Amino acid sequence: MERYSNIVSEILGADAEVAAQVDIEREWLRTVLGSVPSAMDLDAEAVCTRVKEIEETTRHDIVALIQALSETAGEDDSTVKRFVHLGLTSQVRSNT
Image 1 (cartoon, helix red, strand yellow):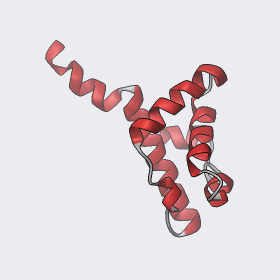
Image 2 (cartoon, one colour):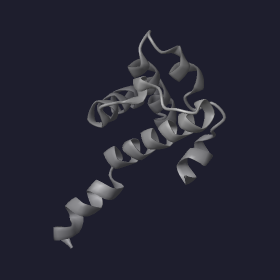
Image 3 (tube, one colour):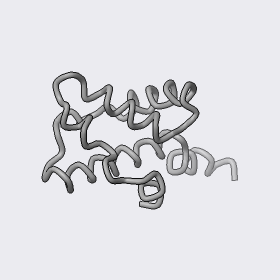
Image 4 (cartoon, one colour):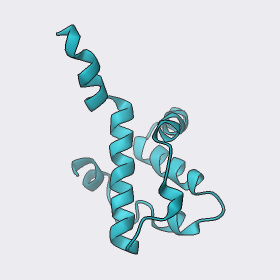
């Protein structure tokens, strides 16, 4: 079973979960706005790292994700800050 641990970790690990959440948020923005703002062209590894840092303080994975995405949008793109996660519940996002 040990030989499968890397594969399983890649599919079900924390980084894979954050990457999937980011994809869901991107698709949500595409649905709401008609396109994905360039601010959502993110380095997945950097986002995962930042989410983990924030989650140490917030103790809430979704709050950490939203904050990390808002930070990466920067001052230039208030659209992402306004619409990221808008209308999604944590349950909807988790079950997608």
